[in-house]
Amino acid sequence: MSMYTGVPTVKRTAVYVYQTPVRIWHWVNALAITVLAITGYLIGSPLPSLPGEASDHYLMGNIRFLHFAAGYVFLVGFLFRLYWAVVGNRYSRQLFTLPFWRRGFWSELVHELRWYAFQEPEPRKYVGHNPLAHLFMVVIITVGGLVMMVTGFALYSEQTGLGSWQDELFGWVIPAVGQSQDVRMWHHWGMWVIVVFVMLHVYTAIREDIMSRQSLISTMISGWRMFKDDRP
Amino acid sequence: MATTDTFYEAMRRQGISRRGFLQFCTITAATLGLAPGFAGRIAEAMETKPRIPVLWLHGLECTCCSESFIRSAHPLASDVVLSMISLDYNDTLMAAAGHQAEAILDEIRHQYKGRYILAVEGNPPLGQDGMSCIIGGRPFLDQLREVAADCQAVIAWGTCASWGCVQAAHPNPTQAVSIDKVIHDKPIIKVPGCPPIAEVMTGVIAYMLTFERLPELDRQGRPKMFYGQRIHDKCYRRPHFDAGQFVESWDDEGARKGYCLYKMGCKGPTTYNACSTVRWNDGVSFPIQSGHGCIGCSEKDFWDKGSFYDHVTDTRVFGIEANADAVGIAAAGTVGAAITAHAAASAVHRIKQRAGAQHTEDGQA
Ligand code: HEM
Ligand code: HEM
Ligand code: SF4
Ligand code: SF4
Image (cartoon, rainbow over all chains, first blue to last red; front, side, top):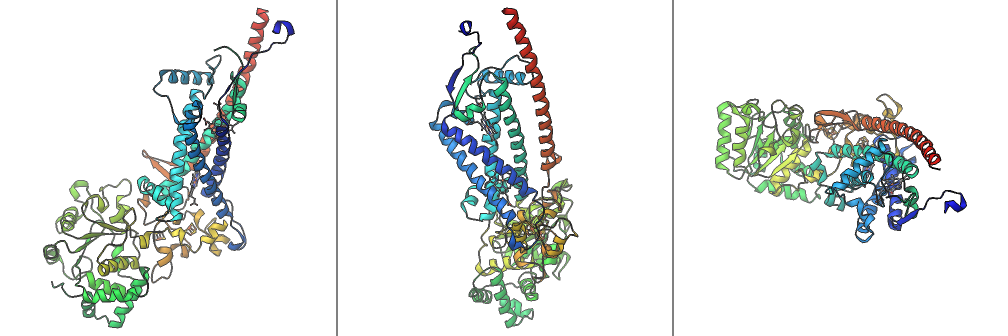
C-alpha cells in the first residue's frame, strides 16, 4: 500500500479487552483509592489546628467521613469487580487469578523485567495484562486491597461498637493482629505500599503507551487494545 | 477460718453501718450501669448469700493494682469489698504471714473446692524454672497452677496478669507471661490497666458475687461494661478532635484551651478502658483531663508499641523498628526519583532506537 501512497502506514489490529463495567470500576476505584490515601494520611497526621470554638468546625469529622465513605465505595466496588470476574470476559478474571504454575508466565515476567531494564529491544504483546503488571495488580490490588479493607473495617468496628455488623465480621482482626494500635499501624503501612504501586502503575501506563507495541491508557478508556504492529 | 457468714454479716463485723452498706449497693449498681432498682437486688444478695471466698495471689508485679483497689473512690467500697475478700488470702493486706498464711490457701482450696474465686495480680515468669518469682520458697508458677486447679473462676487483675505488662516487655528477660498462657481450663476475666480503676475492680467483684455469674466478656475476655468502648469514644475532648483542634506542643494555646491530645500521641483512640467515664481518685480527674495523653496502659504490650508521644508509632518486626511515615516517605521519594531517571533513560533509549531504525530503513531502501 505504502508503495502507492508513499506514506508508511502500519496495520493495527484491535481487540476488545476491558468491558464497560471493568473500565468504570477502574476509574471509580482509582478515585476511591486516591481519596482514601489522602484522607488516611490526614487522619494519621492531621492538618494544623483551627482557631475558634469546637462547635464552629467539623474538619476532622469530615475528613474521616470522606475516608469511610470512600472505604465503602472501595468495598462495594471490590465485591462488584469480583462478581464481574465471574460473568465478564476472560480478561476480567486476571485480577483474581495468577497463573504462577505456568512456566511461560515466569519467563515472560523475566522478559518484561529485562525490557524495563533496557536489556530487550522490544516488549512482547499482550491482549490482557503483561505478566509484571498482572503480578503487581494481584498482589497489591487484590491481596493488598483485601488487607486494607479487613484492617479498615476492623478499625471502623471500633466506632460502630460491639455487636455491629462491622464488629461481627471484622472485630476478630484486632486481637488476631495484637491490639488496636497494631492494626492502625499496619493499615498505615498499607497506604504507603499502595501509594508506591500507584506511582509505578501510572508511570508504566504512560511509558508503555508510548514505548510498547500496544495501547494502554486509551484501552482503559475505550476498552479496545490497539496493536501498533503485526509481528507476533 | 469461718467463711460461711454472709457478706453483710462480714461487713457489719468490720464496723460498716447499714446505711453505709446500702450506699455501697447503690453506688455499685450505678457503676455497673444497672437500673437503680438493682441496688436492692445487690443488697438482698449480700444479706442472704454466703460469702464466696476470694484468694488473691501476687506474682511478678508492682502492687499497683492493690494500691488502686484500696483507694476506691467511695471509701466504703474498699472497706466493703476488702471485708469480702481479705479475710481469706492476700499476702499484702492480710494479717497472717509465713506458714500461717500459706496454710489458709490450702484450707480454702480443700474446703471450698470448685467454689472460690482466684484473683491474680501479676504474672508468672517461665524462665529459669520460674526462679524469678518465689513465694513461700516455691516458684509462683507452681502456686498459681495449684490454686487455679480447684477454683471456680479467675480474675486477672491489671495489665500484668492480663497481658504481661512491663516485666514481659521486650526483651522479657524472665519470660513473664500473662496468666491465660498457663491457666487453660478455667474462665478468666481480664481486668487490664496499669493499674485498673478501683471502681472497675470492686464493680467486677461485686457483680460476680451478687449475680453469681461472670460479667459478659468481650473477645479478649474483658468485662464489656467497663472495656466495651475506647477512651476516645467517651472523651470530653472529643469535640476538639472532630473539629480538628489539637495541642501541637505542650505549652501552646491549644494546651491551655484543652484541645485534643491526638498529635501529642494520645492513645485514647486505641485503648479500651473506663477512664473517660469513671475517672480516677473519686472521679476527680484522669490523665487526659490533666493535660496528658492516654498511654494505653490497659492495652496488650503497650510498652512495646513505640513512643507515648507519637500518633504514628514505630513498628517492630523481625527485631527492626521502623516508622511507617518515615519509611513510606523515603520509599515514595526514592521511587519518584527512580521513575524520573527511568523516564529520562527511556527517552534517550527511544531517540537512539529511532535513529537506529532510521538508519536501517535508509539502508534497506
Ligand atoms: C489509584 C489509582 C489507580 C489504581 C488503584 C489502579 C488500578 C488498576 C488495576 C487494578 C488495573 C487492572 C484492571 C483489571 O484487570 O480489572 C488497572 C489497569 C490499568 N490502569 Fe490503573 N489504576 C489507577 C490509576 C490509573 C491511572 C491514573 C491511569 C492512567 C494514567 C491508569 C491506567 C491503567 C491502564 C492503562 C490499565 C490497563 C493496563 C493494561 O492494559 O494491561 N490507572 N489499574
Ligand atoms: C486503599 C485503601 C485505604 C488506605 C490507603 C487507607 C489509609 C488510612 C490511613 C493512612 C489511616 C490513618 C491510620 C493512622 O495513622 O491512624 C487510616 C485510618 C482509618 N481507615 Fe483507612 N485506608 C484505606 C481503606 C480503608 C477502608 C476500606 C476502611 C473501611 C471503612 C478504612 C477505615 C479506616 C478507619 C476506621 C481508620 C481510623 C480512623 C479513625 O479512627 O479516626 N480504611 N486509613
Ligand atoms: S484527647 Fe485522646 S481520647 Fe480524647 S479525643 Fe483526643 S485523641 Fe481522643
Ligand atoms: S487514660 Fe489510658 S493510660 Fe491513663 S489510666 Fe486510662 S487507659 Fe491507662
